[in-house]
View 1 (cartoon, rainbow, N blue to C red):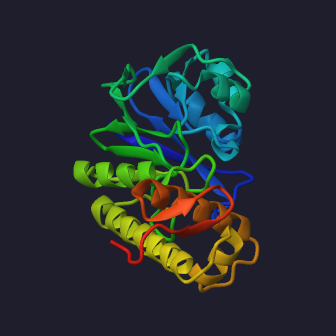
View 2: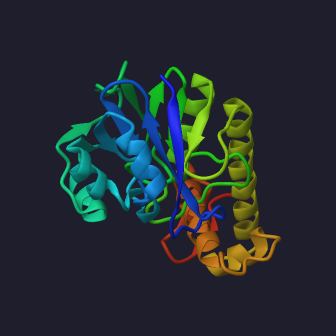
Length: 262
């Protein structure tokens, strides 16, 4: 079962300025991540038998037209079990049904839900034999923001490792081009996150205690316009390092828990 992609211009921190919506083919199609209502997406929806609507996660740049398309098509609206209140707050519509890891949405030959949390706590992917609609877990170029308090770095690395192990034909991301070499991209993103983690730990070990001070030492690039994202990312790394036993972190200040990195 193939995925049709429609890019939607939307307010987003992603450099593309767009979020990709996806439509599965066949009967009773699934519409994923309708970020906004556009003539192109309207035409695609009208040309498809849309019976289901769902999102990879609840960030504003992925959910803007969920309610519009659900009402226009009469589709069943799906949300992650245990996250229905945040789904309704984000989309303006209550879900009809809920899914968990392994749920099969009866669209075409079936679309299976895969837990891909980390970028957001409710983040999932949608799996067919053609590939995985993977939201904001992976991008072909650059990296993904995993920022506290919502982002969970341990969960995010687990999600990348799960995708690497599955080795799907393609990853269909929320931003940027389709990923035709999922394993290579996942390996690169894992290496990037672990390299950033080493930089954060080394900053703490050298005496940087606050997120601002750690950002100044761990990042060797101009952060104009994205410093808030870097700060949130550093906090997520500190939370992971604290769980790992490498630092002590009270939410404001960090200090080493041991003399050398494992």
